[in-house]
Image (spheres, helix red, strand yellow):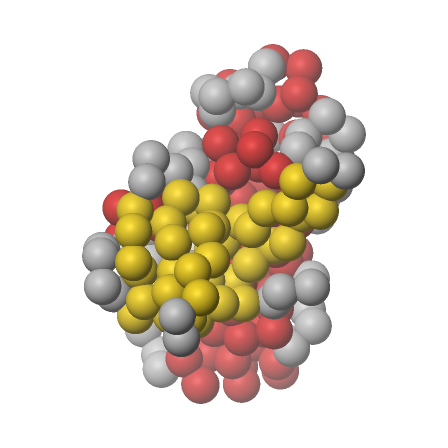
Length: 191
């Protein structure tokens, strides 16, 4: 299992990049938001999911650990494979996708290429209780979670410590996002 790859972006294609790691190039399929963030010759670290099938091996990469965990939840849904999960995560930032699922917004999920209405509804039914509480998408109350487009290092750290996405999100709900990452983690662990 390849957990992460750190190296330099050598080439960019339509939905993938080649990351050069000491002379070895790894082709990694990534989401549209991550594709827009990385530039040629950037030094990057992708959290990866290594998919092995009967006649192929593919790497799927994510700039945040939270995005990788959401990807793993998505592919656990019957009928949602890695390509459909990437399409869903390409709709918006991972936090917005998570919030759409938490708010049962099947219309948003069904906008992904190759994901129909029934598949989107299955994603909502299977994952709504697993992704955590809604923070901002469609919610009327104010929340202390970070804005959708920014990666949340505290959330990534809690997931790395072994917290499921839902519990990590809930722990950070009442913690002020303007605090330093270390302080947010400490306060979340106390909750």
